[in-house]
Length: 288
Image (tube, rainbow, N blue to C red; front, side, top):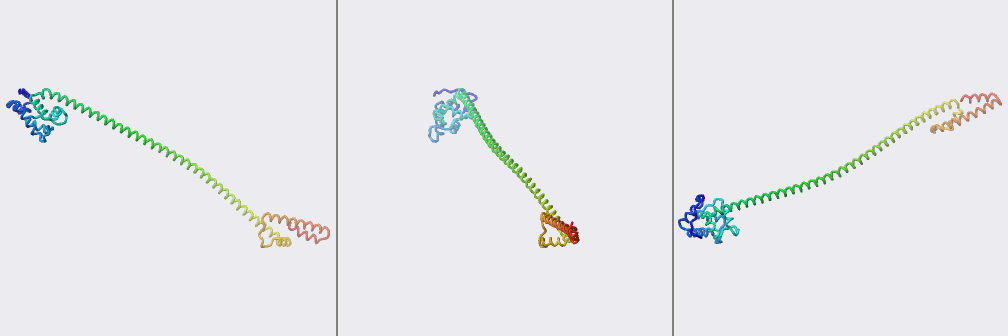
């Protein structure tokens, strides 16, 4: 490097004043030796490079302060991109700072580069945000589609259940109609049976009344005619049950026929031989 002394910008006095005064007083070679010694002292592990925190401390030892610019300087002078500053890169950095090259030439470029990187970073973040939104939207759409599918399945299931309920309801209605029909049939049967029982009871009552009347008539006839009564008693012992209406009518017809035959015979006898026959005929006639 040359031993020229760079002009001192007034704006850098607060940041580089000590280093500039040292180089102005002791010369370029002494300042470079001081810079090399400061680098070697900061490189505690002997790796031949220093990181960002070590760079800040090393520059401070040389009386150089870079508030808020350490990251930008490290990024610009780290040519190999390994995140550290090697000795040659450090010497170039210090010379540029002291000469004002960094402030007049490199810093605007670095700031422009940083702005560009910030814009790229913002754009990347925006793209990432848009991608996240798109992914979220796809997730929401997928969930909506899944919910819609579940809703369709539920609707189909409900429709099937409603159809089953309707079928069951129709079956129950048909069974109820059939049951009511059977109930009406049973009611008709009961009415028919009650009517039949009433008719039967009425007929039995009428038969009993007829038998009672027939028995009374028979008793009266027995009282009026001893022979006829005895004949009837012989034919119908007291221990026998009363005859039915048909049997009683047949007996009465037979008795009337016998009485008519006897009456005719008595009349013939009276006409042929005398008054005894008349008397007998008169007794038989009292029955009629």
